[in-house]
Each structure stands twice: as structure tokens, then as C-alpha cells.
Length: 87
Image (cartoon, rainbow, N blue to C red; front, side, top):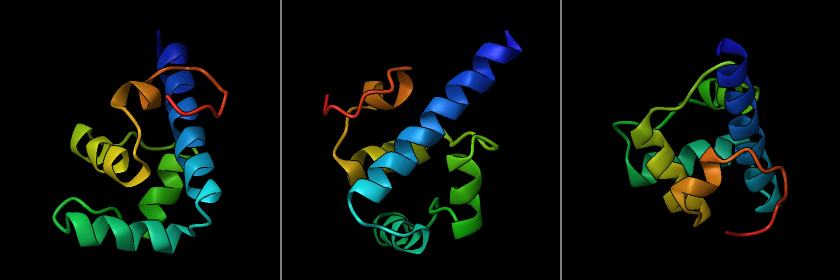
């Protein structure tokens, strides 16, 4: 069970990194966008890096913020597909 959770976190982090890079954003740029939308839950640059590497799990509210920034459905972030198609 623990393996499955860490695998899901890895996919989630990879998707966030992929989307960020496809938009030409640095970690700092993404952090700034998060601050502009919701400064109360906006992650630091170092926390974003931990999320992207699968070492931290974003809260549901933070995932909603990423959905807003990347214009993706929550389901897209939570599935394990590695393709980069928009869903």
C-alpha cells in the first residue's frame, strides 16, 4: 500500500513539473503565480521542488490552485497516466 502512495506522489510531482516547464515557468514563477492567486496557501519555491520530486504531497487546496494555474481538471493530476495530453 505504501508503495502505491509513493508511486502516485511521484506521478503527481512529475505532472506538475511537466506542466510548469511546458509553460516556460521556473519554480519561482510558479510560486509567484500561486501567491498572486492565494497567498495564504501559496507554497515556497523549496516546497514546490519537494512536491515535484515526490517528497511532499500537496494539500487538496493547493491542488485546486494548480488546477487553476495549469487549466487542468483535478482528475488529470490524480491519475497515473504519464502522457502529456490535455484532459
